[in-house]
Image 1 (tube, rainbow, N blue to C red):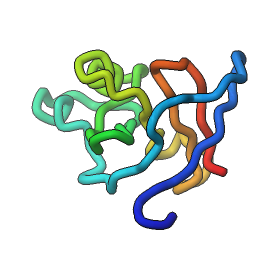
Image 2: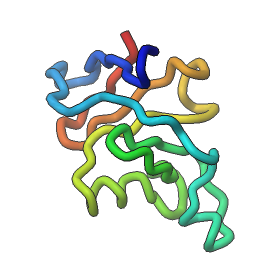
Image 3: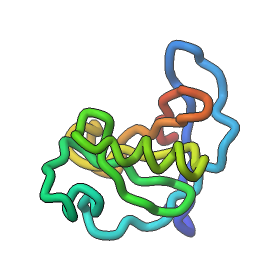
Image 4: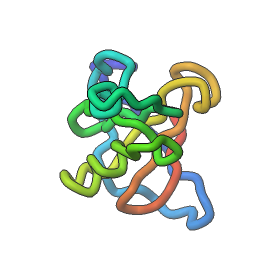
Length: 104
């Protein structure tokens, strides 16, 4: 990954391109801060590729990654953790275009 930028390829039932920015800021601590403040556990984490926000997935009680997208409009989040294929090679989701993205 050069200069913190990674390219992604869209894959999914609609098979259309994702038109959003796909640069990847560095991740902070591996936790959902909103859940941690409430004492909640989370299932998986999603990293916002626009600003680096780390939130829990929709299978978690808080669904904070989707809430972040809804409040900011930031469209692409990368899966972090065990449910993401291989470490460093996981998928991303484009909320705006509703497609999965895979590293090239």
